Amino acid sequence: MKALVFTAPKKLEWQDWPDPQLQPGEALIRVSAVGICGSDVHGWLGNSRGRVPPLILGHEMAGVVEDVGAGRSHLRRGDRVAVYPLTGCGQCRYCADGRDRLCRRRQIMGLHTSGGLAEYLKAPAEILFPLPEAADSTAGALVEPLANALHFVEYAKTDPGPVAILGAGAIGLLMLQVAKQMESADGRVFPKIAVVEINPHRAGLARALGANVVVNPLQPTALAELESFFGEDGCTTVLDAAGFTASRQFATRLVATGGLVGLAGMGEPETTFDCVELIRREIRVAGIYGYGRDEFQRSIDWIARGRIDCNDWITEAPLREGQKFFEELVQPDTRYTKVVLRP
Picture 1 (cartoon, one colour):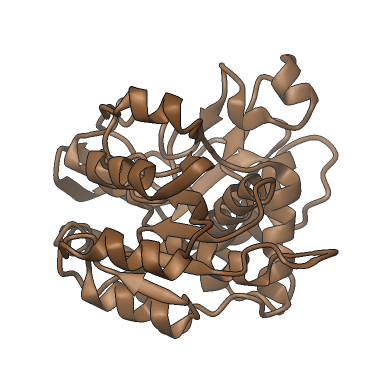
Picture 2 (spheres, rainbow, N blue to C red):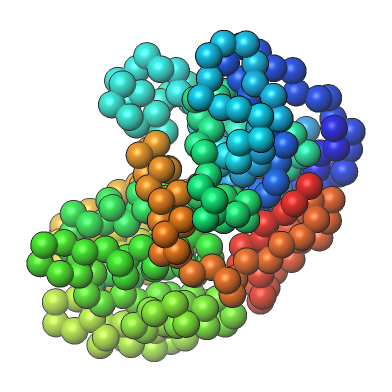
C-alpha cells in the first residue's frame, strides 16, 4: 500500500509500505479520510516524546471495512466506520471502569502503532464504530476531535459559570460549540463564553460560531478586556486548548479565585507557574486528556444530528500532498484550521 510516512523531523515521504496482515479479531479498513491533529504537527516538528520515525501518523480516521479476520464480529465488508484509535490492556482498574485512555499500557494508533495517513490500516474490530448515513467520511474524521471536546467540556461542567477557551484551532472551535449547547436543569451551564486567539482567521471563525467575545492575547489590553467582560465574579473556568507556556500562564492570571484551569493542549511539555498565586487564590489546575468510548459514540450522534458546524473551517486535500499542509499549519498566520486528507 501507499502511505505518507514520517521519516524525520519536518519530513513526510510518500512511500510503499507493507500491507497490514490481519490477526483474529481484527479488520482491514480502507481509509476514506484522516484529519491532521495538532499533536500530529508537534510530532512532525520532532517535539513528541512518543512519535519516533519511521511512523505512519494520524489518529482521526474514518474508512470502509475491506476484510474481517477470523472470529465473530459485528462488522461486514462495506461497513463505514470511525476508528477509536486507542486500546488499553483490558485488565487494569482504568480499563475496568471505562477510562482506558489512562491505562499505563495503552496503545494509540499514529503514536505507538501505525496510524491513518495511509491507504489502509488494521484495527481490532471492537474499536470500530459504525457511521450512520447522515455522517460522510469527512465528518467521520471529526468524530475523534469532537469526542475530545465533549470530554473537556464535560470535565468543566462541574464548575458551571463563565468560561474562557484559549486557542481557536479545531479543538477550541469544537469546545466552543459544545459549551454553547451544554444545558443543565437550571439553564445554560456556561452563560458567558470568551475565546482567546492570536490568529485573525481563527478568531473570525470563533466569532462566527457564537463566542461572546474574542480577544488577541498579544494585545496589551487583552486581560483587562476579559476581566471587564466577565465582571465582578470573574471567569470560573479556563480551558487551555493551546498548551504553551504563554497560554498556561495567561490562564492562571485570568481565572477567578477558586476557579478551574483545565489543561488540554500539549504544545510544550513544561511550564513554570507562580505557585504562591495558585495557593493563595485556591486555583485548581487539572490535566484533561482524551475521551471514553461513550463520548466517542456521543460524538457520532452529535455529528449525525447536525449539532456541529464545520463547513467554513475544514479543508480537504489528497493524502500525498500532506507534507505541504503540515508546513502550512505551523505558520502563525495560517488560514487553515482543520485539514482532512484523503488517500
